[in-house]
Amino acid sequence: MNEKRSHKKRGAALLVAAVALTAGALLAPTAAQAAIPSHHGGPSPSATATQRAKTATDVLMASYDPVKAWWPSSWWNSAVALQTVEDYTVRTGDRRYVSEIDNTFEKDKGAFPAGVLSGDPLLGDFTSRAIDDSEWWGLTWLGAYDVTHEQKYLDMAVKIGDYVQGYWDTSTCGGGVWWNAEKTYKNSITNGLYIRLTAELHNRVKGDTTWLARSEAGWNWFTTSGLINSQGLVNDGLTDGCQNNGQTVWSYNQGLAIGAGTELYRATHDKTVLATTKRLADAAITSPLLTSKGILTESCDALSTTCDDNGKQFKGVFERYLSDLTDLTHDQRYLAFSQRQASSIWANDRTNANQLGERWSGEDSTAFPTAYDWRTQASALSALLAVVPQRR
Image (cartoon, rainbow, N blue to C red; front, side):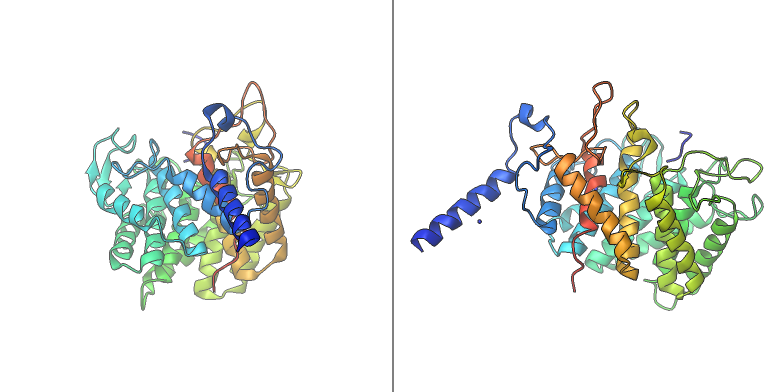
């Protein structure tokens, strides 16, 4: 989406007490209690990073609709939420939700009229007139392939990649993928997704050269198009005259640019790609446009407004890809940033029912209260996963 539109006698007694405490932390409280943010640590204050991620994932999956195989009622957001579940599975080794991945694939891969799963008609194979939505789903199925190693998921991602490739156009602005089938806008999110998708395909399709060439072309275009401003921040898109439009710096645009460079570096080991990627990350974690008092903050997180259903998930996308860069580089600055986000979320932005909210700082507004729903849950969960140690 763009601006237009994640305790034998004494021993036994201690064990029983621990089990009771653990269960109590996961049981849902009354509706009134659930509405009260747990600003003082709440249940399970000493939970480990993995335990916290498990708790948050269980809350997220409670909103999953197994009949329509999505989270109602957002199509691209469901793709991102499912990616987050895949991230959780890989990060923790907990495979309880693998069947939901397959359920979504099998039930939603067909064509659907507008209004059933998306505001747009779905053309089949998770494609639509919204090219960015198609790319989100391509990345979701690559994530499913990484979890299961089932060829059908990789095959679907290739189909989606081929579809998206049809909207790469050098006749306008010298390159880039159009945001929509009507070819009205070249923007950051669609092209960040394109580079990440094509690089992931190259890194998974044996003997590939085609997807790599496409990813490199996408990166070269993105980094010279003007989308990245002089501060190292990514604006929303280009004007009709192919200039940076100066629109909002959203965290997910920055995150996808970081994720694009990270995956392309894995493919090429090109140090200039990594240097640019780190420049994007460094700019993000220090900019007042994206942080406030060290906490990742979207412009719509201001107490005088609120994020729409799209914006609720932006920060999680950023954290997913900053975490990926951290895994690649082991840069402790990035890990420290993610630790700050995860700690603040758990201490300040969590209800007694372990719902995670929109404003990670814990700040709130009577006029525009912090939102708590599955989108904010998935977004904040990505921050929690960023501090779960990699499995060896």
